Image 1 (cartoon, helix red, strand yellow):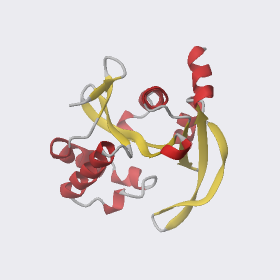
Image 2 (spheres, helix red, strand yellow):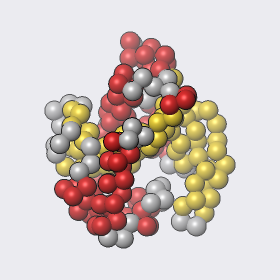
Image 3 (spheres, rainbow, N blue to C red):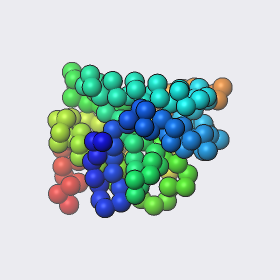
Image 4 (cartoon, rainbow, N blue to C red):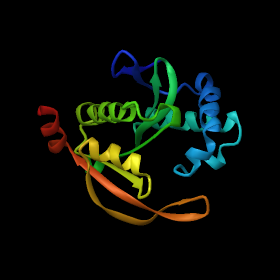
Length: 185
């Protein structure tokens, strides 16, 4: 399994559809009510085979050079996901998405995972800009972006359609020179 070690306890791994589908489905299903308020895919995820298809699609996108989605593992146990949903070659940019199971929150996990993903993007993929759209009312995720040094570029009206409602999103960006300055501090 490909693994990017963040520290002795935390790692990012490429999904293995056959091996990871059951555990990821259970993680999402056990936290369905919480995750469904932020993630539009959750209601469509009905059975393990759905998760296996999603993981397969993610792995294919990685193989095609279009995306990089990883499972966040704490002491080997899956606790969430983070990744570049799409690379934009013409602008040397990518958009990031992330989620974490409620039991893993409040432990600095997402801050560390996002820092690692930014290192990968700016150093390995030669990105100039990383972007993330966070639902306006998702304060913890907004704080993760700000803590990582992202700049709030503006509000996207009706950015997502979740649970029968249009929801506004905050658009954040981080440029490679800004990231480099933060790393030097």
